[in-house]
Length: 315
Image 1 (cartoon, helix red, strand yellow):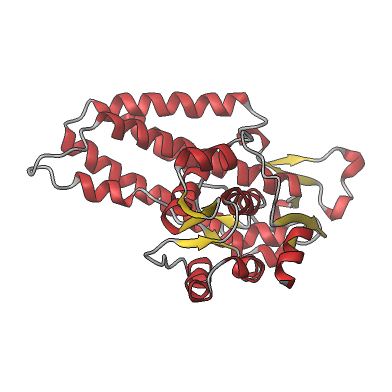
Image 2 (cartoon, helix red, strand yellow; image 1 turned 90 degrees about the vertical axis):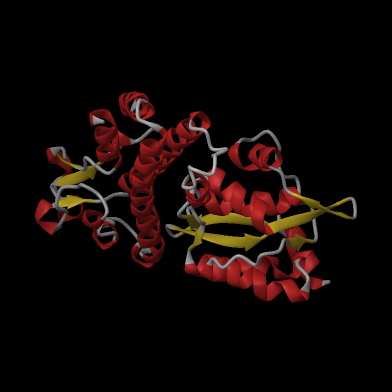
C-alpha cells in the first residue's frame, strides 16, 4: 500500500517555493522575492501532470490487489482528503474581501493553508510577494488534485462490484457519500438569486434562495422558465470565475440535475448529464441567449445581467 499512501500524501502537499527576484525588481512592493507554485500548475508543468497520473496508476495497482471489503475501507480515507479541498474553497470564498491589489499576501495568509495541507510556513518573514499569478496557480493545482482524486475513485468503483450481496452492506452507503456540494461566494449567491429569481415560480423562489445560500436542497426540481442552456451557462460562468467553489465540474453537473429542470418548447424537461457536459465541461454547445455576464472589475469578478435579462425583468 506504499504507492497508495504516496498518492494521498502528494495530493495534500503544496510545494510552495520562495524565488529570489531579479536585482532590478528588489524594490517591487518592498519585497526581494516572490512565492511560486507554477511548477505544480497543470497548465504550466507537464512534469507535474505526469507525476499525478503515475501516482494514480501505482495507487490503483496497490488498492485493487486488496480484498473487496478492504478496498471499500481504504476508499473512506479519500473522504478526508476531499474535506481538505472543501475547506480550502470555503476559506477561499470567505477571504475574497481581502483580494484587492497586489501583493496578495494578506489574502494568502488568511487561507491558512497549513491547517489543510503540508506546506512550508508562510509569513512576512519570507520577504516574498504573493501575486495574482501565484493565486491562480494555487487554484489550478487544487482543482487538478480534486480531478485526479475523482478519477482514481471512479476507476476503483468501476471494478469493485457495487451491486453488492446482502453480506456487503457498506458499498451502497459509500457510493452515496461520493458527492461534493457547490459553495457560492456569499455576495455571488445573493446577486445571482436577485438576477434569476423571476425565472422561477413565486413559490419556488424561497427554496432557490435557501439552496444558493445555505446549500439545503429542496427535494424537488426547481423549474427554470426559459431555455435550459441559459441556466447551465450561468452556472458555468460562476464556476469558472470561482464564484462557485467546493466541487469540480462533474459534481456541479450532478448538483444541477438533482435540483433543476427547464422548459423545452413549452414542456418541462429534466437535465441530462450529456446535455450539461456539452455546455459546462466543453464548448460543444454554446449559449446564444445568456442571462448574465461575469466580468472582472478592479480585481474582483462581478455578475451583470445581459440586455435580454434586463428586458425580461421589466415584464
